[in-house]
Amino acid sequence: METIKALVIGDLILDKYIWGSASRISPEAPVPVVNIDNESFSLGGACNVANNLVSMGASTTIYGAIGHDDSGAMLHDLMINKGINAKCYYSNRPTTTKTRIMAAKHQMLRIDKEYTQILESHIYEEMLDSIQASITDYHVMILSDYLKGVLSPSFTQKLIKLANSFKIPVLCDPKGQDYSKYKNATLLTPNKKEAQEATNIHIHNDKSLEDALRALKAMCNLTYPLITLSEDGIGYLKEGSLCKKPTIAKEVYDVSGAGDTVISALALKLAQGSDIESALGFANAAAAVVISKIGSVAATLDEIHSFHKIVSNYESIKDKLEGKKIVFTNGCFDILHYGHVSYLRKARALGDILIVGLNSDRSVKALKGSDRPINSQEDRAFILSSLECISYVIIFDEDTPKNLISQIRPDVLVKGADYRGKEIVGTEYAKEVKLIDFIDGKSTSSIVEKIRHS
Picture 1 (cartoon, one colour):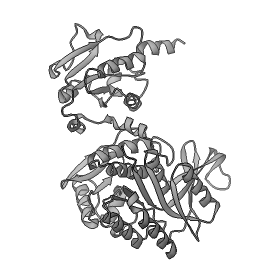
Picture 2: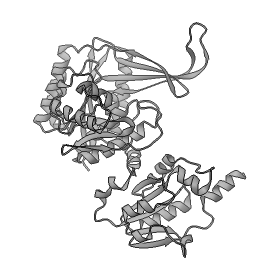
Picture 3: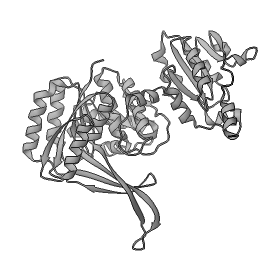
Picture 4: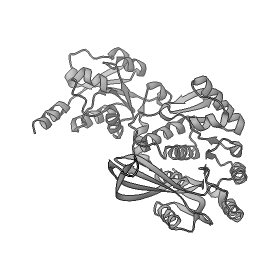
């Protein structure tokens, strides 16, 4: 596949983290005292968008402004070291820097150093001349706006007009209440709060969400109106009707940078020619990766593809499986071991697609007892999705997978050889049933007992 060449323009931000511990309250004021252990620096703002794109395999160039200061030099070096082609223009203002005080994985305080007025006129002229000279090199343009002055209304409109003239998708991460400067973009990625402020529509149910999406489409003449909904996924219009792409369940540690990851993922897939639904599914998987980490971080393709295999229901993947021979099996897969992997590989060899129904934590407790599972359903699903032989993982909450099997109606239903002579749930919905031998002595129960007695 051709390497995607992405162009990012926006606010360059240095993220600084001060890590420490807080075990006492200051005698000077009712605030915690943080004992500093170390400091770290990472790419923020538009830089994090570029970092995500590089991590996903795109060749990425970024345009923006930095100050004549140590932070600007560090930010430039960080981007170069990440493989980003950094076009930094020096402005007579400090480099935007966000300093976060962290204790026990919790953010105690954030200190911002920034100047948010528009740039000097000669910088806009120089950037536009450079971008115009190389615009045909790129497959997609991303405008990452953090309201730090780079994306002025006039400059933004010139960039969108330029991209449209060459039929290059242009995606904007918008800020502020006036979205007129983003008019004629391919899509925007506002979150729920931002969309409410821009449209003056209180989003509290599907009807108001659809109204807000229609308002955004009309306001900015968008090709794809969408709104990110945090834990509820992404809402968008498909042929004029509301659709939702559900999020992938995962423990949330830090949502900072998730918006950067979403727009990066969407840009990559649209540049590759994917339809908007496939792009949104990929973006949701990418977001699931980064919110499970601390700070503004990038998601790799391997991580995204693993999360992308975890789906909430069969309907969401049904259209992709037409004409494929579907194999289904199910289980708890609490502590994945050699026996499991051998079994799953043999199951996959029986068809084109292997779908694994994974017992939820509740159903595992019902089957195995109150001390199980050892690993949560999210962790078990992610580990399974990392196996190349597995196509999709669907978590089910019932005591048996009968309902799920009735929806999938697999070509092959696979169970362990210990079911020989026993009733197998869902047999009536499968074209055939195959039994696969387990490897002797390899089971989760034996591993658990060994650990308990060690």
